[in-house]
Length: 167
Image 1 (tube, rainbow, N blue to C red):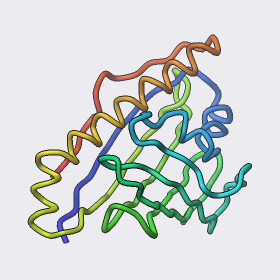
Image 2 (image 1 turned 120 degrees about the vertical axis):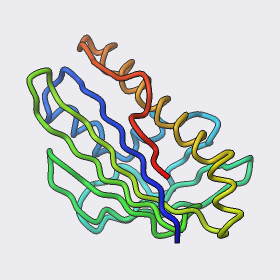
Image 3 (image 1 turned 45 degrees about the vertical axis):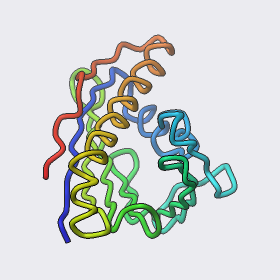
């Protein structure tokens, strides 16, 4: 199984507790996800985050509805949590979110390891569509997060691109 990785970093000038609180509410995923994905949480809200929590979503890929189920496999507030796909569009999706207090506020890091189904066809889809689409999704996410915290009156520092999507 061929795996790929995404690494992103974003710095927010806000207390770590505020930043973690925002990210630990699955309901906020709908806010930071591009509208074209038609993201919807199926799990009744509010959702209390904790280790072992199952969360069901619906997304649309090329107009086709896809059920996505994740489990929170690790939860260490306000420093880290991991969500892992149990059902969805990927053969593997393992997303580590880390939050580190730094001089300018909080450094947010995302590390995703993922794999595409369908063997060679999946690899070609990744090369010509999925990699670019994921990059755009994470760029959108960074912009929205920046806008949210800046509109709350907090200065935010963001990079202009996803740091790395490795093959």
